[in-house]
Amino acid sequence: MVTTLGKKAKDTFAVLSLLGLLTVGASISSVKADNLPDQSAIQTTVSPSEHSVLARRFEKVAKEMQVKADKQKILLEHYENKSYLYGKRAQDLQSHTSALIRMYEKGARLYMKEAIAHCQMSQSVNLPGKHRGDAHCTLP
Image (cartoon, rainbow, N blue to C red; front, side, top):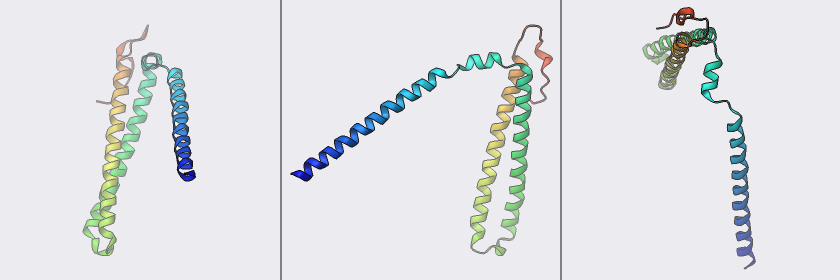
């Protein structure tokens, strides 16, 4: 009887503790959400030149990621052509290198999408005294 009562008390305490943690977590997340500025306010405060700078940064990172992917492709070709040099590890090296290629290429695509988006934003933002063509963005 004593062990059953003790087990019930432990379970009740655990449930109440979890509910307390959930309540505290929910209140903290609502405070964080209240302090964040809305997206439209952020977009209106950024100038076209800042979007152009961001576009160039994202483009640079995308190109770096593509260079890394190209280097991994060369390495993968080596692993495939000279797999006898690596014995049992050859397949592991090939699959790891293939995964790196996919990761770098996906990253390059995502960064290029961001660069294009910022380029378009730099060309579409209208500020008083500025024309749409003032932002110099060379991305497609």
